Image (cartoon, rainbow, N blue to C red; front, side):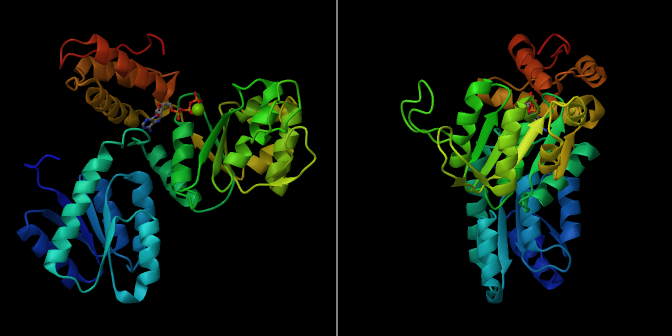
Length: 383
Ligand SMILES: Nc1ncnc2c1ncn2[C@@H]1O[C@H](COP(=O)(O)OP(=O)(O)OP(=O)(O)O)[C@@H](O)[C@H]1O
Ligand SMILES: [Mg+2]
């Protein structure tokens, strides 16, 4: 952490006397402090400022509860630490808050010393968490992605099957992971299967497992991905590529929550939340009889469509900056800045490979550019 920068703290409580007294204590201790007296106001401030380093929130608020704020923070600002303040009466919700990722809680009334201690610890641990943040961090600015992230927050709490559609490289897997992280299954496995990459003959055993001797080469019993994902989520990528025979088997798991390993007549129960993805137009596949309509309706309980990058131009520069910072961190090199020519080239390109193409272009630019400020990544040079 940069010691010269003052950390900014957002305090949320419906009682103005509490927010103002906490603000005073925090400012005396050298922090910058902003306050909100309801959840909606807090979320507005978070969105507008985007520079908050820590949230301190009451659980009971007049509009959106502190728990809902935690849900939203976990998805939209996954590395922003939250401390919950609460009266003794709401010990159950305190436990829930901790389960949902609150770093600490302070039962009211608490001393200034206890508050400052909790703040210091939360800021220290968040700077450690930031080192890992790159892997699944979702960057966006466009209103279409804003809506998608709202949806991710809402569907995470349900058990519904989800179908994520969108062109290749739009971030379907990233969104699937975010849904899992935001669900009650988040402490369990997130298992991925790419049905397009596994040969037809092996897919059934990959998904459902097999018993010893089920086929040539089945020298031992093996568990499939549905077994491994039990209690968690299964991400089934490129579901449009599945054969019709496999589609029937998948339908059975979705309808009855059960399957049989290859070579066995045993029925195995499974508790898996399925998130499927495809870059195909499944409605067209239904018309051409390569995709089962009943399976489509089972999968498509909730559809999340990721628009191509060219339709969310507002995301291009924030994503570019994000990839450049990440690359600078990993390559021990200085962060490149984009020249104005690069900015206009990035904004006018049509991005057939979407975010993945942008990520690759930034990587190539960071290797090839020797000047810190005159970097000119060339979109369209392959991905
Ligand atoms: N909004 C985003 N913020 C940060 N990184 C992103 C974002 N969207 C996509 N990415 C990155 O772009 C790459 C492609 O994303 P992902 O693999 O999720 O796309 P996909 O839609 O599943 O692609 P495909 O259809 O080819 O499987 C990944 O490295 C991912 O981390
Ligand atoms: Mg993918």
